[in-house]
Image 1 (cartoon, helix red, strand yellow):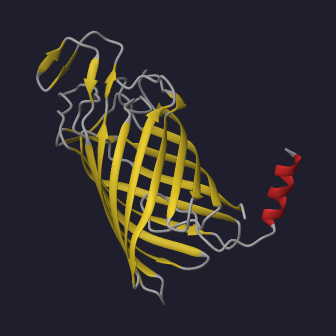
Image 2 (cartoon, rainbow, N blue to C red):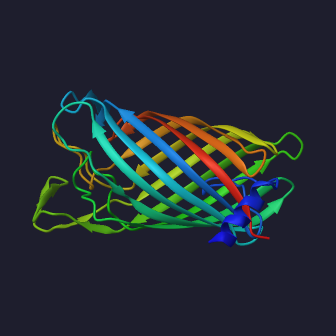
Length: 296
């Protein structure tokens, strides 16, 4: 332990030359380099879409979801990175009698590969998996901290970065396969039918995004538009609660920024849902502290 603390103290005095990166960008940690991140996020909504009907739910007031996450991005090589994220989630409302939930949600891992690069243009392949870390109740929507499903995702990312200005354009598309879940009841209603089982099929989903920004040695800033959509599912019934079988969709626009001149850095994100289906119109933000470790 003393040796590890000494190593960390020495690393604080050395300058970092790369960036913390995530599973939706074209930034890589060099080989034998780790970026650890501690992040806090919050999202709030009081309007939601019940099918296509946008309405305010006075029964629960403003719904809030908060998260504290630990993430590590590891440079397996200069062109292959591993990203692991562990979130702790808690929910609450400003009115009504629904109890908020809290606990560790789903651990996720992403493998990102720079498959092709030519004169600023690059193609990346990204694969991800996730599984629940705790036995939370996925059917208690909208207070549950997650869907409770195991998932596998495949993503293709295209990126162009101008070599002189640092201006970049990134686009990606993903497909997410999700497992069935088991709920604490003997039957449920979905798609206008009654299912006499406790096994629920969570819809698969797609996501896509476009990002335009500037990446320089010490800072990054971008604007983005993201689209998430289930590939199947039903709608929230009139005056009913959401359920894991619902076809949830959302379009989000926002801004992301990062400043990391040395080993320690900071990042921030803000987003707003402009349009959706069977989910809340949320405003969200995230703040993070970054620390880079050079294992060389």
